[in-house]
Amino acid sequence: MAHEFAVPTSSGLERDARRLHADHKGVRPGEIALGVVIGRTSEFFDFFVYAIASVLVFPQLVFPFVDRLTGVMLAFGLFSLAFVARPFGSAIFGAIDRRYGRGVKLTIALFLLGGSTATISFLPSYAAVGPLAIWALAACRIGQGLALAGAWDGMASLLALNAPEKKRGWYAMIPQLGAPFGFMLASGLFAYFVATLAPGDFLDWGWRYPFFAAFAINVVALFARLRIVATEEFGALFEARELRPVRIASLMRAEGGNVLIGAFAPLATFAMFHLVTVFPLSWVALHDDHQALTFLRIEVVGALFGVAGILASGWIADRITRQNQLALSALLIGAFSLLAPRLLDGGSVGQTAYVIVGFIILGLSFGQAAGAVSSGFSKRYRYTGAAVTSDLSWLIGAGFAPLTALALASLWGLPAIGLYLASGAVATLVALTIDRNRRRQTAPLP
Picture (cartoon, rainbow, N blue to C red):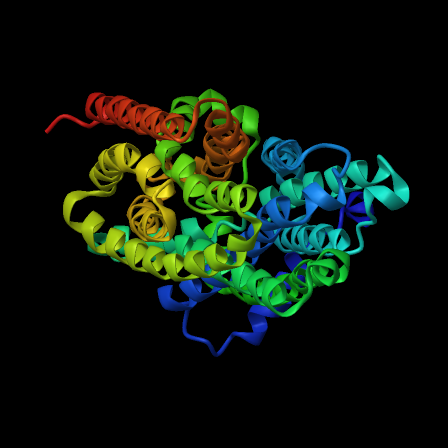
């Protein structure tokens, strides 16, 4: 009788899906990698569509009652809400995962992510509904943040566990490719509509299409990821408690130190992330609105160099370790911080150099930002530990970065941006030093 009222889970659906792959001789790392890249591309597409609209659309549409600079800063304030919501999303969707299964959690999260992004495409203007437009945009942004946390599927951890021992760095960088791919897709769409539409038409309806496309992209990503989640290998790892979700309180009691170090170790990377993508677009658009289209095109090209940097990070990390690779990247970011203000203020040539050099360094750093510290989690806590660490590192390093950077540059000029980047590099080096000392102290004696 007790089983009569058992809570339904997705395990039955996942078992049925696994039967469809009964003749499939295992899931190879390459197939896992494809699912990871598709999933991450969809997430970053949603992320960057909102970020670009925060510069080109929302100041005029949602905040027309203030000057342009203040409007962009207010839009960046709403931008940060998703990062604040992510830790709460991990707690909520972690409970769904434990109770109903990973398939149910992932389906809800991706539909919430695509739905929140697509809903923004119907956002009314402030002129039409007043402050309700601001509240609606904020609600959608919070929905994006909650969903991004729930979209954590553990496939990056599965990929790491299935990677050859001497190629861990190479496989660790694969999920990170979703960022430049998502950025190129989002920037390309916006560049197309800015180039082909009159300014009035773009602000009226053209900007809405990239948001609406997000729902279709997320549906494709859902099926690509569920196919992997439903395989025997993924289920076996789950059942063996190697990728089992645990309560966040339990994680923090057992391995809270790893979480905190992991949150600060990529600080330079995530500060660089927005100072190469979102912030320079806002700075250029504020000073010359006609240059926004040209700069978007430059950033698409820069993202290609970012892909090359991410690929190179995997090759380098397998030779000098992922921790050393992240430390080397922090030093490069520190060096770039000395040049960044002059390049960004150097006209079209300087701005092009800023984007290309910045994306290369970002790729080298971002390629190993996730795996360098999360590899320190024990198998029992790796699934939840990697998710929570990602939430906190994005919140600390990236959540308020566009707002902070624009405020600093507006008050004290572009040299303040160099100091901001340099402080992130110092924080990363300190966190990695602490992590290295902790690992040395806990290493078993020979």
